[in-house]
Amino acid sequence: MEHQYDSNELSEITAKIRVRIKEARLAKGIKQQEMGNILGVGKTTYSQMENGKLPISLERFLIIIKILEVENMLSQEIGYLLSGGDQQDLNVKDIKDKVDKIKDDIDQFKEVISSIAQKWITDK
Image (cartoon, rainbow, N blue to C red; front, side, top):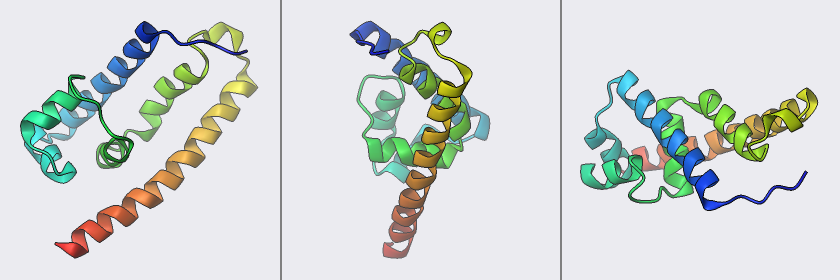
């Protein structure tokens, strides 16, 4: 089933993801300044990204996911996005296939982020 996304749907989904990121950061006791330092931005810039006032690049998003260890939690939001927002039209196999694909992608992203983080640490 093909689904056209309107800006309100996408805004709602990204807002939920940002809330989950903020909740995870707070649960881990990580300050915005610390996240900003890791991402190479200031506290204000990180705050604006976390609150939706500035976009988050894919690279930074993946670093955030890795640091906060929110891959599984976010896969539900991403699964919702992939379903076109209509959970009733998906069967269990479709959902499982999409989650498996996302997990594979996350594993690949973890490898990339680990490589980037390792390079960043050794270059300091």
